Length: 272
Length: 272
Image 1 (cartoon, rainbow over the protein chains, first blue to last red):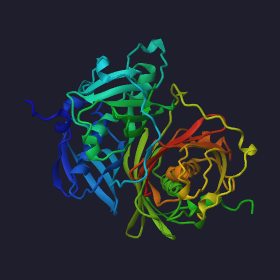
Image 2 (image 1 turned 90 degrees about the vertical axis):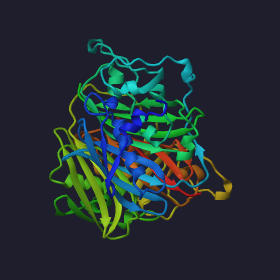
Image 3 (image 1 turned 135 degrees about the vertical axis):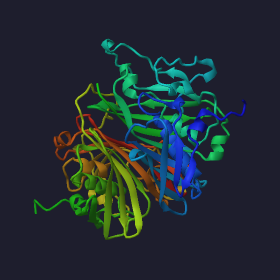
Image 4 (image 1 turned 45 degrees about the vertical axis):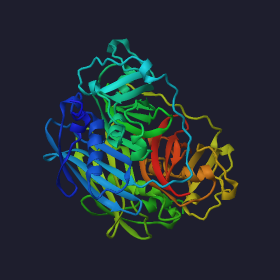
């Protein structure tokens, strides 16, 4: 049992079915209100690029556009290598189920060369994850049970709509997979989208809503990520605005040593 | 002469050459070190979507990946409508010159419905643009002469590399086109990428560098934008890190009344 594959590895396992074409299968563990966790789609798409034998270098940037809800079962990913240069490759991606385009996107893979480097942003201060209570998710979706959340600030709480709550959009939370899993690009691509949608965070109840586009930047090499083992990462999510059915989110994933591993932004639709 | 077209309108003028296909031409006014201003590519791609008769609603999000340098002359844009729903359309875009893919990208267009709304982010405070000196750009590129920069903080300055300068990555600057031009999506798509690359801002000299991917979110309707006339917008750019040949940037464009009109993020390659 010790070597049983992790649910995230089962959910991102792809079978090559041609040049730049892969087949995968949804896993109920990551099911959302409608369709699957967007972060899993993000992870499946990055997995496809990493599995493509043409891939040189490691992911530095990824954008995924969520066009329609995934249904349970098989899906296909197509990776087109739009341009391949000396240091950078540009991939155009689509994820389909039959005739339905579920997601489109792009990934940039590249080599990292040692240069003058400096991190300007600083990790938020937070007590160690082991000192914080695990979060008990009250909703009906499956995927939050696959994440070990240790909230420092801005825990997701459900209130009665009549309470007319308006909370800060900011959350600070240690994150790990449940069960724990190594830090790698597939993990980062998932964790960058496990912050509950900011409109629900702010109002404290579930309204019709969904992420429409998600952009992730990765700031470390595979080897650097591996050094973190299965450490908790410190996630911070915030929003600038919710306006006329569209709201944004910014987020960061920090290593325990204060190094920024990934940053992201997303735009979500909502109705309230 | 009063009605002479604005250089930005000349540079973004497209001729339809088939369903979802448009032909344009570079304009020397927006030439960069190599190729054209990335923000202009952003603007040309959004123009193509806006010109496409299938387009419903207005842009809410755009990602452009810069695959190769533009050369002077004609280019072609292809817009594929990946999915068209009740409130949202997903567009996959490419800009080519002959066989060369210069840029790929995606745009989400959507309707905006009145909902509960709140802006959490606040506009940085800044003295009015008229009280600030216009910025005199010392470099050789053409495009900065097409922008009226009124720096409040973090003006772009060139130093000797030997000075080993390390400045803050933050810039705060009022922006308008030169000559002045109305605020619309084409203008926002351009202005979101007129912040000098942060690595050059930080070190104070020009190194080999280029934006590789740019994501822009638009937070207003066309009608709301029109109300600002040709007002200066307050731009803020910052960075979280420069690490091993990759650096990020975040930015915002604020209306004079404190309303956030657009936000963006980009990842740039550099060598130093």
